[in-house]
Amino acid sequence: MKFLSPVVPLAVLPLLVQAHAGKYAHHNVIPRQASATGSDIAPPSQIPDSAGAAPSTDSFVLSLTSINPTALPLSAIVSTAQPAPTQEVSPIYPQGAVPPNIIGAPPLPDDILQKDYPTPDDVPPVNSAEVEEWIREVANSGVPIPDIPINLEGGCTVAGNAVAAADTDRSRCWWTCTGCTRKTDITQCPQKGTFGLSFDDGPAPYTPDLLDFLDQQKLKATFFVVGSRVYYRPDLLRKQYMEGHQIAVHTWSHPELTTLTNEQIIAELGWSRRVIQDTLGVTPNMMRPPYGDIDDRVRAISVAMGLTPVIWTQGFDTEDFEIGSGGTTVQQSLQNWERITAAASTSDKGFIVLEHDLFQQTVELATGYILPDAIGHNYTIQPIVTCMGLPLNDAYMETNNNQTHPDPAQGAQAIFTGPTKALLPPTHTPASASGPGTSTSPSNNVNKKNSNSARAVFSVLGMGATSLLAGLISILA
Ligand SMILES: [Zn+2]
Image (cartoon, rainbow, N blue to C red):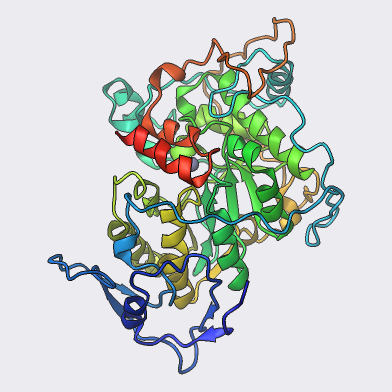
């Protein structure tokens, strides 16, 4: 793969966009944008919605500090886009390789994904020997698990969740609906001007393109990975890890965690931890709840399992996830991003933004527009662990210096002080989890009956790009 020259002056950016109209430059490796000092800084550029496309009657104008010269035109980043070609993972990091920048890291294990795992994209059964072991781990952690009712799927606006959503006494601290946080949570970077960079829901077909861009820009990110995605793309996870990105937990099947039983939450977090550890040899100690769906029950279980909850700065959601489904547009996502940068400029703290590496549109948006603009703003762009002032080895249980990054369970008794609920004792005969190739579904999977489109989207992401499109079309039909 050819590399372009190291610096492209930023000037007349709308014209550059227009020059690439109709071309698909997705796999070009992008040179580092000019730094925000010196004469090659572009003035804020106005990017018409119709850049590179037929004139539009919309009067949509964005002001970004810089964009990627090879960005797709906005008019091409749409839900109906044809699947772009995907890259093979390269290099493949073999067993025994040791990450160069994590002190004390073990070599990559040899038995990558040769074990039995639960059915991908389903809430795992809770009667396996593994889950029962993790239930004991939580019970023995000393962290009280609050007795908070299970929510209905659908979040804050569902009628049956009205009391929980109001949370008038903050006894639930349901972040999704009230923005309530506890001392356990990370929602910002401490230093003003610091952008805690994270991407959720991979590793996915277009993650390699994002990695190329980050590599060229010498940027590192935190990837909140879904265990079921790791199952299908272990080599890609190894590449992310070996090249210095932070890996963190984003559950096994991406459910709304507040809708699950305690034991199911444990199974979701436990299997995600496990598949990452089997792949990398290390276990993350940070997690992000899917949809930001966390209350004190989910929080307590997470910290009892050694996982610090990381959400995003309240309101700092690009809503890029919805571009692929047509629920939002790339223009709306960029407006969200501009609102985020405006809010960041008036905050005395740094910030964390919700973005995804799940779909080609989200990767195109990030590499074409959002990250170049972030670079143009001269933000300090770092993984979450780094923006928190911690070394990368503090991001994994096996290599964590517990002095600088203490176990999140410490002090939890003082946080979760309400009534508690005992966990189900392990009364079952230990049973193996069902393998992913089996056709039988877990009988205790309460979420299956409420499958929604988001869940279905996840279920097709083990497929290649072509079948992925077909899968999405069938879902959205
Ligand atoms: Zn997610």
